[in-house]
Length: 385
Image (cartoon, rainbow, N blue to C red; front, side, top):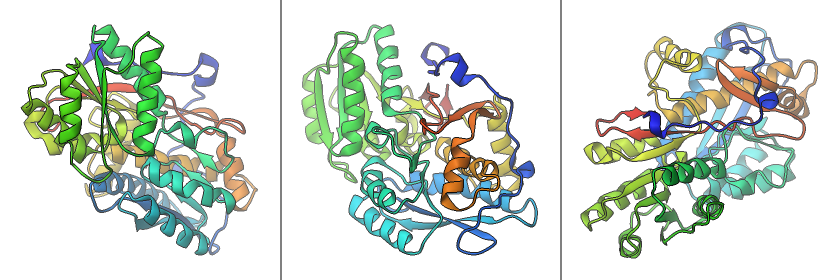
């Protein structure tokens, strides 16, 4: 999909590779201690049931794959474990789970799934001075203003929607509508799309909404189809986006569909089957189905060594990379102990690369990656970039 593929990167100085970091097998023994002398527990509240379940399930599977192999590499260092709690992608449940995890004195919060849930959790983490690492969201509201407790692996929704709009305009598609979830996530994606369109003298021809964890898309389809757009940018989860695509096409829409990464690419492909052909999704991690990059080869090798229990997809790869980020923070903590040691270790990462996936963190920059590219569903359950 060469005509759809672009990468956004920061300046050359920031993104200069410093050579591959050591893999799980060669990471130095971390000296940090939490809960006990040989155990570090990360707390994760995520959707493991409901309309966004596959996002939590797959992210967790990828993270556990890394940590299982990391823990098996030798004695003398603290084991890293994840205590998972299901919030069903609902903010109130997430807040309750987060408070329980804080009461249990977990070492850090990790891998939260979604914007509305992360928005509910981050203030609790901040008040408790608890690191909040690698949430599965690109919302700017979680990145600005700067928060010492929050560390982001992925690029922002503004990065993703900028690339989507750039691609649409390059293809001559300027009548763009936005279908979005009626919550903080949907607003974040809508804001990014509006910003990208405005920079080109454009604005959405229509918008339509869906409530979180529902597939009631009829009103949105009617409103957006009436505006006769050439393309629809979708900011929701896989079940509602799939429902929208089917309903819009049935109602006569013949244009293009573009989604941001949170949709859950494999889950969307599975939901749509053959109807997914041509649907575009922006990605914030490399294509896990390709062996072109060393990091994806490492990931696929890890799956093979782990008994093939993990499905290779974008969500599980993001979980794997997020876990590797934590491990690198532990390694670089050196003699510094406790949560401050982990924070300092993450900030000490600087510019480096996880086998070709560029990472940069520092004391004033807690967003590790700005990588974005576009992919397309092929209709046979696969993804092409």
